[in-house]
Image (cartoon, rainbow, N blue to C red; front, side, top):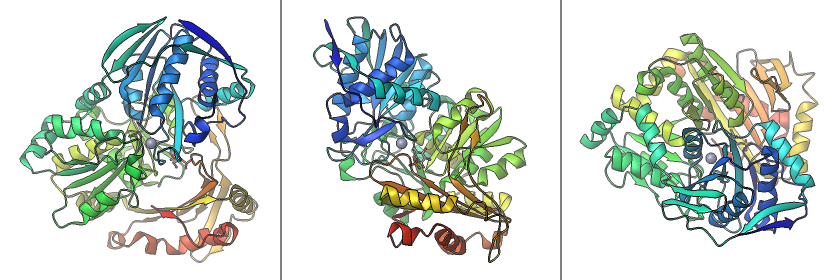
Length: 544
Ligand code: G1P
Ligand code: ZN
């Protein structure tokens, strides 16, 4: 076997964002682009010979080619064992599960999550560490530094490996094992949830579900778990075949992009639970019949009820949410008497807290929830939680939410996204907001009086690392909040996200329309940021 030390020119734009390196497919197809990044990860690890790595992706366009390149580079660098998901598929949570189960040293996940796929769309690569979680900022910063200085990468001259047939083969120093993408993950789920109870409710028809896999990676997972193992009728999983372009859709589980599911859940005979997951299977959207569950509320309901389920009977040790996520879960934590942590946006900030057993459950407003079972957010896990809860409570989703609100109060919540703004204009909006921070405390806007305005800074309670500029927060006396931040996952221009929330204790006011209830705060957010005037857009492109 010939190993080529291939001379290369360094790229200057390989800084990973909120979740790995994401670029247009075309950028990844430039000679050396993917190779340089992979070599920079290997160089950051140091001596990779003898290491065990996991490899898989969400099946998007360029997934298979990229996998072959990484296999050839892993062989050239002397990796001892490579566990590759069959057909190149591993959902993000399944990859995290496999890394932990086989005590691998880490893994590559090829995905641009909920971004569209295809030759003109997005591709991405993330590296996860031995705990199964996204690489820390320290690690990704070092990868970026390596990538700027890289002069050569190592690659083996071998023909493509069959990644579709299960089994193991030796290639030079490396054992390449093609593993069942679903089995280990399904097994883990069966220990966390009451499969017997859920199964009998689904088989008898007492419980019904429609799961929209959005032609992304969770199709095979949902079919195997929901239909084959739990006995939901065939057809309960829709759009189940993973496609390289996700069927032309945008694999983001929200009310806009999961349109088919939303339409099904409006029908008079809608199933009890409607759910969807994203490109790589870490996000989830949950709906009841004609009822949408806001992700921040879903997290709070999970925290309030998780200890009813087999895998969590010993209770929760703490919870965490990203800063822009609503405070609903904090209320549950206070009531139960456990700690709640507020972290910057992105799952990587939960890893230390989970490893140190400070928290059991965590989540983000961006349709992400998970627990200490792995180190990624987990779409199907959240759906199984809801199925299990419905099987126990035997009530509609909407009743469960109304009861939750009457116990804890309701945190009305919305996020307004202004997408594809020119980067300079987006920076200008943030600079304009920053320039007001000093004067804002004490300022009054109708009934809202500002008590705190800052640029969120996080000191990790476990390793002491500090992360700055994580979003502008404006907090009012009555607990309402407005948060502004720029997305770190886009590949075109910039996206401004405005997060708005207000707490309502009175049950008589728990059935308001969210946009109406929050309209005065929305107006304050627009005027503080001058977003319309400065972006040239007359309104948000997506409201969730
Ligand atoms: C978005 C979400 C964030 C999530 C990330 C990866 O990042 O807002 O919560 O962790 O996707 O799924 P953003 O584009 O806002 O940086
Ligand atoms: Zn995702």
